[in-house]
Length: 262
Image (tube, rainbow, N blue to C red; front, side):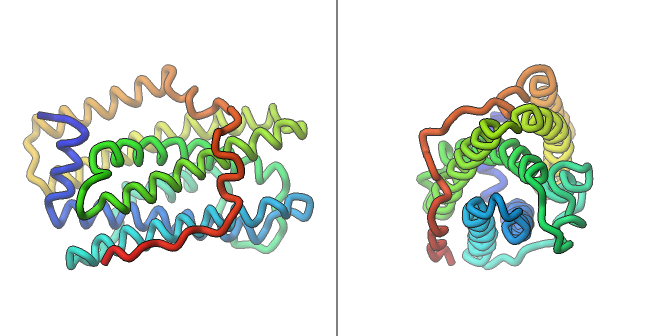
């Protein structure tokens, strides 16, 4: 049966597909950790109260990268190089979504508009991450090998999404509402396209590793295109709405230490 649960179970059960999955995830989380650390260092003077939350966000991303690497180590596996076409984080940056790495490598302070772009980018990508981790938690939250990791990362992603909502609403009240809506819309439309392309690339690599038939690969690709069609028509709206979260000040403390998975 072709379902999300059976697909991920197949990837989980095979060392090579699991190694690629964790390597892609760890690389993306590490990149997110670096980006947030640089943004925290460059926050403009008038927004310095936001810096500790951005730092916490980056620390969580670094922690997630370590967790994925620990899951590999637990199975006696080493990370593999991430194929460029599967690198979601770098493809977003290359297509001008979020803050350019050239700006983050410089020492000039960011502007409030830069923070709007950063938070809009985070709100969109954290929506995706939270949804994916909710799915994995539903299917594998009780799994003996990855259950604890999935639950911890899922909780963190929910915190990140809540933080983005809260901070964007604060900036909207300060008069940045139109800029926020423009940034959210542009980021959401770019993200759904890149997510489609990355999903197709990841499934192509998994298909080669797992020996999927042409029919199965075609069906999976058709499913990915169908999801993109829905998101392009209407689904992207869920990524641009803002509401005050139940979790207030979700990143208002230090990042919890990652448990030992190895």
